[in-house]
Structure formats: C-alpha cells, structure tokens
Image (cartoon, rainbow, N blue to C red):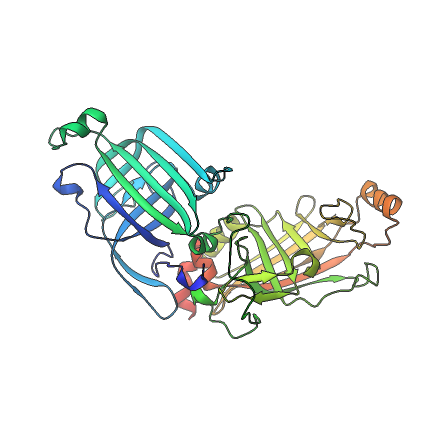
Length: 416
C-alpha cells in the first residue's frame, strides 16, 4: 500500500481502478470498448431523480502526468441508482469482511450509449434501464473487491442465449478492485489493523509541497484523515496544569470534513512513512480538538462556487466546542481525561489562493458546564482553568479539495 499507486482522473478527480464491464446480451448498442480499468463517480442528482448515483466508465486509454493525476479517455458509462459512498463504506464492515446490497424497482440504473448531456440526465442518452441490481463486496488484502450485476429490462430485439434466458433477466456485470490507497484518499476508513509500511525511512513533513500534486498530500494511514499545515492558539495559555506542557504544533489533522460539520485538531508529531502515508502521535501529541457545527462542506461549497472568499460570523449556542486534555487521564477512554467547552462566538474566513483554501478562525469560548467541572474537581482534584478565546489557521491544498469532492475545487487552474 503506497500513496503513489493511487490513480485519479485529472479532469474529474474521480478514482480509476482495475476492473471491467461485461455485457450479458448480444446488442450492438451495448458493446463496451476494450478496457482493463474503470473510472468511478459518486454523484447526487446526476439523473432526473435527486438520488445518489454511482457512474462507472470504461477507461480506454490513460497516462499518468507530472502531478500524479491521470489523463484518461473513457467510453459510455453504466449508472446505478441509488447508491452512495457512505452506503458502500458500511455494508462490507462485517466480521468476515463481506457485504451485499440488493435494489429493485423503477429505474434502478441505466446504460448510457451517448455521453452528450440530455435534459434531466447529466450522463447522456439512455437507451436501456435496470430493473434492479445487486452489489457484492469482499474485503481482500489489496482492497475491496466489487461485483455489481444490473438486471436489464428485456428488449424484443435481443439475442439472449437460451440457458441465460431461462435462468434470469439479461444483465450487465461490473467487476472491480478498489485498492486501499484509493479508498484512503477518498476518506473511507480502512480495515482495523491493516498493514501499512512502517516507519523505516520516514521523513519530516515540512519539505516544500506542491498543492496540486497528488503524491504531496499528507493522509494518516488507515484512518484516512488529511494532514495540512496550520496551528491553533488559545488564551490564556496557562489554563492547564504547568506540568502538562503545551506542544508546538505546526500541523492540523482534519478528522471530519462533513456536510454540516468541520472537525480538526493540532498535532506536534507528524512523520511521513516510506509508503507516503502519515503517522501521528495521536492524542498524546495534540493540544486541542475543535468540532465546528456552524460550518461544513455544504456552506463552503455553496458560497465558494460563486465567490473566491467567504466571511461568516456567529454568536450563540450550538456553534461547536473545543476539547482538550486535563492531565488527569488514568486509562484509555477515561471520561475525566479530557474536558470540553462550548464556543460562544465564531468568526470564520476562507479564501481561495494559489496554495488552495486558506481558512482562518477566531472567537470566544464559554465557561465550563458547572456540573462537569464540579465532577472533575471532586473526582480528580483537577486544577484546569477555562479557555477564554481562540484562533486557528490552516490551508487545504488543491489536490485534497479535488479528491474529496469540493465542487469549487474546479477553480484550481485560475489560481495556478
């Protein structure tokens, strides 16, 4: 598992994986061009139904370019509806590493025979529809093995082998392998205990990095969390016991890039492994963790699709929280090992630059919950004092914005 092995299309930032599409009927309009790889896109509202879709294109030709992305040529896609990355990320996570999904009903998918966009369908001209499909996923050492079978609505002109006609409806089968490095880039949580190259030959993360180079991204092994340059500061700086010293942290670990939530923590111990992935010191090398409920992908996409910057100010309840260690942790998972404070105000700014999305934030922090701090004082004789205000700053590189599906990332060429 090496970061440089992941393949993403330069035009769409969609992953490219080994696989093939097999046509189960004799129909000239359904012939798939010769191919050994597939391009995958998870979309919302790609058809007239505002449902999550999975589009799969045969890759007829490809070339890796200097920034690590792939320049690909594709044939016409097959489309499965409804299915999302979130669903796939959950159905295989059983004890035996296997999972399956069955969908039936009106227009569960479609076969596109011309890629010219049509009204109500961004994929192109549709001549055949699925009446249902089945997905089977198996966890293997190199990644997730997929088999998708779409049952096609019968056409009178089709020449279907008699044995197939008696057993089932005509079908199209997609078989593919999504490597772990690709899944990690996409934000999937890898298998617990997944073997990743160890720390031998590691390097420090502070070398000059190109914001558009795929191989220059920093991603935490197995957990799929991106790491970017940045910092968090709080005041007063001596609010915790003096022996629980502050660690100078120059990196931010993005633990949640969700539609309605933005979560991150600082980290003082980041190193790049031989595989290209990142290892951090975990909670022991972090000072503060933020959960922001006032901003997320939806807000940033909506504003930055139209503008190159945003500035938002909030006051009140439910904005988010800051979490940090108290110095009294007795064991992993100890509920009194950390404490949280609610944010009272938040000023959030984001600007598109040559390096990507520069984010700055500041605000005030509310006092401790009286019942919570009373328990800390009583049970652990905690001396921790509340934070009063905060600032943070970070830059999300263009390559990260592209592969994680931020729609405004298509502006990257304007800033380079």
